[in-house]
Length: 356
Image (cartoon, rainbow, N blue to C red; front, top):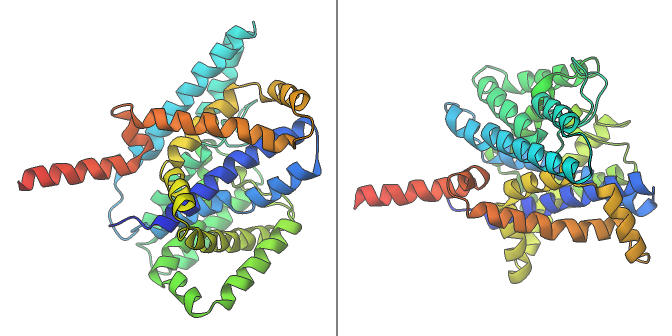
């Protein structure tokens, strides 16, 4: 199936929002500022839900679950990235003359538990969070669960029940490996699947007023943002608005992406970033976990006092993440884990060779 460029553009926007959102978190920890809080509200209102919804859009849950494909693309990628984090934090501990053993123990436990955020509800003590690659574990569970639920009668009821169990249980205990985050993410995957099945984008072309309604809901969610972390099923003080706002935000970003698709240079750039979103996410996670950003922010603030600190952080991080992702593209074998399209391309080449 031919790639639809505006979906890649939407993923490109979302992965940039991930980097910008994490820059806002670090900046807010360093010096709380209104700019960082606004940026955080915008980015966290849609970025992770968009990835889950678009993943569901291209799913075929009625088909057999492909264990090896899913494990290689998601679980193996998680393990490789987590190992890179352990190497990175060990190197930084050595440079800072800190205990390598403590760094390895704390970050190793974070990698084993697989939580995207710190919580006091873990089964055992976990001092740190592994960060953004919780998404890979949650997506694995969500895909697996949706494949199972799609085979049952009254699938929508089971999806809602799955979300409810994941959401309510995480108020009392946070299980390892982002299982409950995956249970809630099933709903977003299913919405993406239904959006394709019932041609929601085609309907929105016929009824443009739906775009306006989605935009109003998204803006309301941003303005009344009460926090949202899908990593630990925290949908803030207004969970209904957070969920509906994230869906509306996803629709708006897809609509904006369709407009950007008409702009050749910008569309190509964001499309390329979107196709590399998995690699960029993992490289970003490594630098986010391993590097002492609080110290670097102090240096940046001193050097450029007039520039908003959140933008300085983003400007420094983005080239690192893009270059790292580009380097991953050229590492044999491993590159297929971070760039799933390479596997498809290789399979097509092999099929052509066999045919000839």
